[in-house]
Amino acid sequence: GAVVSQHPSRVICKSGTSVKIECRSLDFQATTMFWYRQFPKQSLMLMATSNEGSKATYEQGVEKDKFLINHASLTLSTLTVTSAHPEDSSFYICSARDSPTETQYFGPGTRLLVL
Amino acid sequence: AQSVTQPDIHITVSEGASLELRCNYSYGATPYLFWYVQSPGQGLQLLLKYFSGDTLVQGIKGFEAEFKRSQSSFNLRKPSVHWSDAAEYFCAVVQGDDKIIFGKGTRLHILP
Image (cartoon, rainbow over all chains, first blue to last red; front, side):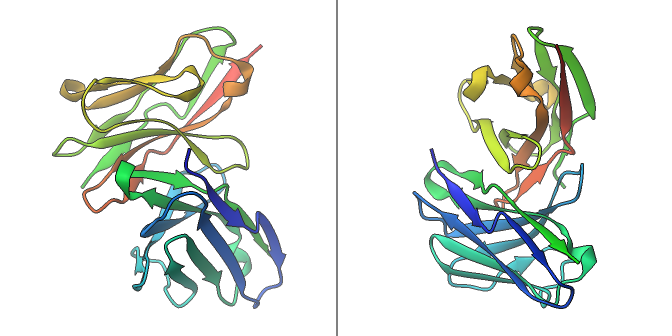
């Protein structure tokens, strides 16, 4: 089946630094990828929709200058958390949409801890 | 607006017992429906999906779900659960612009 990878799986950083998370579709091309945030014991919150070759579309309340998204190729999208603060600590999950099957496949997630 | 409701936050069943997790949705047209499973600290894995056709769909790990348009439901079932099925289960529906709307999840606990 379709596989989506995320790197890194865990990251700890100091407050004020930036962190980049990669999302790759390994065996299919994805013109659309999505970034989610999940707080402990809660459902996923869609942060933004990433379309290859164009600007990401952010959900209401998500700061686009803080969460930079780049979808430079059909298999790679990156989320950069800029000037991270402790409240940004969370579990970030990406998904990639396999167009022929209209199915989203999810990455394993990245746990971010900001000290 | 579309919404997905999973009325049970927690469900506990004994190992070997049958399982049904409820999911109701609101959407004007025929929805694309999904069930995902999330093990602790992990991402989500697709269990099964419904787009059209046969309303009873089979998924991985012995799970099945039935789409009932009259009840706006897409309940997940398994005839006999295993301890490894303990996880959180999310029902989801795709909006017209391809965004997935998730339910709040149902945490499944298995008694030995």
